[in-house]
Length: 68
Image (cartoon, rainbow, N blue to C red; front, side):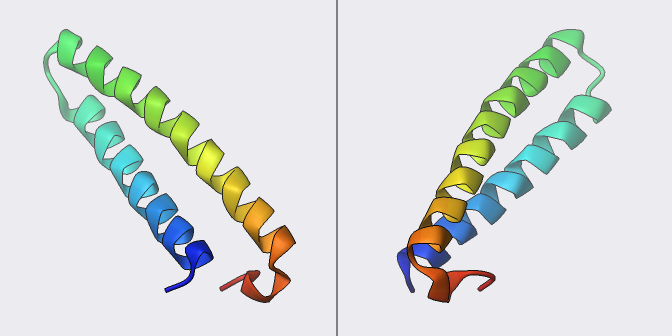
């Protein structure tokens, strides 16, 4: 597995985690828990943006991996 593939897989996992945190925040009855889930989502969103930027950079450096 290439570095680009690994980073893309990591990005997919982070997106899944973000979605799960969103679901937990929406379904939680406890306001404190909702706040914690939203804070975690914000952190994950930042990580997701960093990974997306890295994927674009890797694809720019290695065009053969673009779209794979």
